[in-house]
Image 1: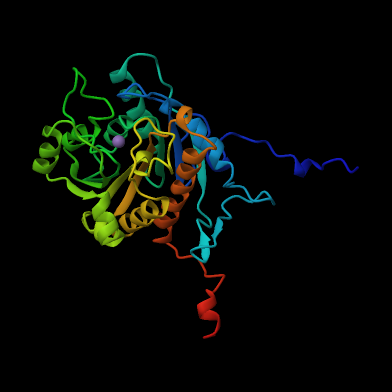
Image 2 (image 1 turned 30 degrees about the vertical axis):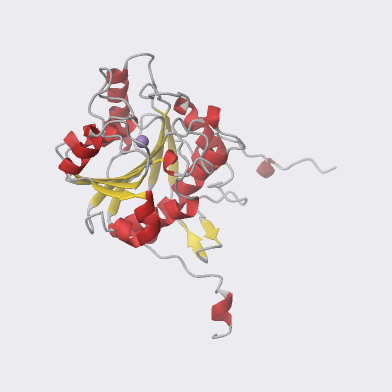
Length: 331
Ligand SMILES: [Mn+2]
């Protein structure tokens, strides 16, 4: 038996998509910079989202960033789109924000600092939570960078002002976002959860949140949903994985039946990307203790790639490689 060559042995970093780790303390030298936020102290009921970054990293190993010849940034051929995606787009994994026990406010400050460190010019920060409360901390890292429209894919509005003395939990996050002076608007897409109290719904409407329910998205399609986003606006996109149906994303703290399919979510997210200009992205609420067969983590890993592909396709369209069968006859 032939012993393996040195080239056939490759270190298996547990990084997002197998991307190289960021140099410690240095600004990320890549187009896309990932950071994990293993924080779930903002959870109302079932905790576990602190294990989300590790699970999404593990699931993302299926979509390896490094090709078999060792070449990075080779991209992926998307059989459905019929073209290459993310060719030449470089990625780096900046690790996790270090979380301390018990203190929500101090941890949110750590998260803001961690995101600010990678949200420099030229990098697209991709933040993987963690429960949804981290989005408020991540948004604060965009202070001083101009107006920002927040696009939230979620089953719940997360617009509760205060409950049982807490204003920084995952059910409060969009209320807090709406108070940030540079956040100029919020689109809430895929909303369908049951709400016990009317105040948060009324407050979101008073604020002027643009609400696209799951039913409206199904009825009117992704392009109509995306029209809730001001054309060309700088956008921060936050995806709560519980926007997916409970069957397609069981591994989350507060799943609901009647949610979006992966395809519905992906097409709506692509439409949003094509309408606005995404400058930051997070994916939250993957909770591995409630997942099985990596269903939720794997969907999260794929969604991030699909959204990134849409973002960077705006800048350089890939070459078509496979023609659809319907086009072959016309050639
Ligand atoms: Mn949420």
